[in-house]
Image (cartoon, rainbow, N blue to C red; front, side):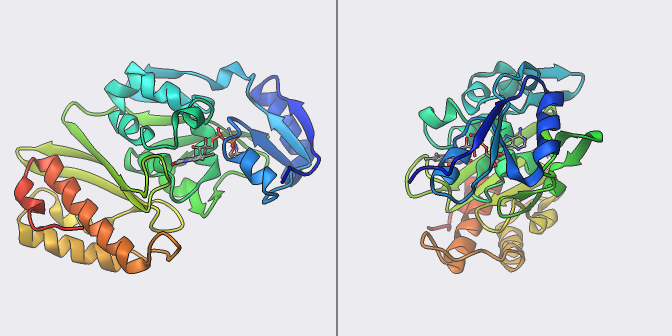
Length: 293
Ligand SMILES: Cc1cc2nc3c(=O)[nH]c(=O)nc-3n(C[C@H](O)[C@H](O)[C@H](O)COP(=O)(O)OP(=O)(O)OC[C@H]3O[C@@H](n4cnc5c(N)ncnc54)[C@H](O)[C@@H]3O)c2cc1C
């Protein structure tokens, strides 16, 4: 199938892109890497009258560190994240996560801004943004606004962005020296969307977790920051305590059923991921010794 007929405009600046979005409202769609938008158009899941191509807007590119903030421009491609020494030094969770996003051909075109604006609940980067406590920077006719990642994802393919706003950048606190991270996902094949995944950022001090942000994906309509892990903080984690946290996690989650997995399988996989995460972060293989898939 081919996309319905549409008009095309190549934005020359952020301001110009916003003018076009204001003039056309819901009838316009922003084009970044096109790796999600073009398939959706070809399947006629969406039929915008105007495509606003932001690919030439240089101010949306680049990765910079200023003080303790790492800023990633919206047009930064997945492949650029993988190659960046700044990302490796200050947000290494993203390196592990992006390696699981699709395949090289898609990573060469897909962008972080497009990925986050698309808000697929099975996508890796939205979960990482919540785990890293990122701020999403949006620009619209009223100027710039900053949205905590935890408030940005509002449902399946839904975000806090209005039709007249452009996602221009994300800001991440640079990783503390004593921080640690964990990323793992279960998928049928490497590069497929996850059946269930977990991205976590943590601080480990004296063999204890003093901070932990475990964010599950493909298990709800948006990334899920698990509250159940709070009881694992600032204490010596025992297998019994981990089992309690796992039990609480299971109650907290409300996983979807689809052709990949039913809800109980997703709950089980989430518990396995939590055990692997805590065991890896603390360097305690005993904590997931009894675990089985
Ligand atoms: C076969 C295949 C496998 C894939 N596997 C995965 C996977 O495992 N994990 C994963 O996370 N992704 C996967 N993807 C999607 C891929 O990561 C996309 O690149 C990404 O989701 C969208 O980025 P994009 O730059 O291509 O955005 P586009 O396709 O250009 O846009 C996506 C949506 O976001 C909007 N948009 C784009 N940029 C902006 C902006 N700056 N401001 C506001 N709105 C904007 C568009 O209007 C559109 O609605 C896969 C894609 C394919 C084709």
